[in-house]
Image (cartoon, rainbow, N blue to C red; front, side, top):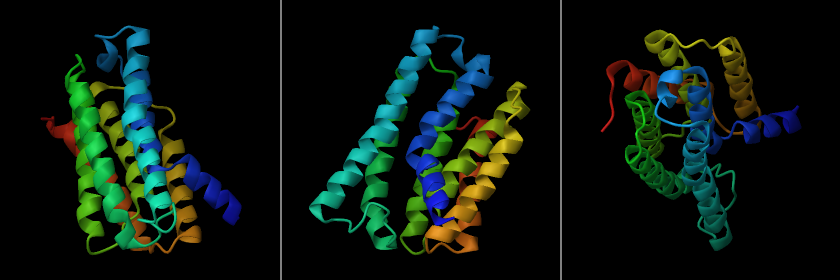
Length: 204
């Protein structure tokens, strides 16, 4: 059971979520890809992966090797602050690059929601631990709901996302010291961040 929980936590790690969000968004909403060729879409996906997954993972590994964090899982709340700040910087850099290309406002709003959710997690982590895993999957669900509601996107897999969110929350309870409240709050932050920015057209 614990091995399965660790595997699920790795597969649904928050660093993969922005890339997954862009792939899903481009796949279900043709409005977002109107200005790009198929190759151009994957250039955007690749850029997002490098900035929001490769860079944060590399930084976390270097912080671990240098002794700034004691373990890659970062179970201690205090050790999460610096990695969160670095990750937020990388996400903002990715957003800047997205603004330099003809992306649809909804794509920019999606990334604004991701950044706001991460910033909220960072602020909360100064005093209380919150599940960033759940923020990631909650953000995916909020994005899909927003695209369905406001662009008429079809997402037959939405029930599967809810099942995955429940399984991930259970996994985090099994292998981490998160409380149920931290699981629920993390998911709510992610969902509210992406759905709210899509609903109100928030981007900068």
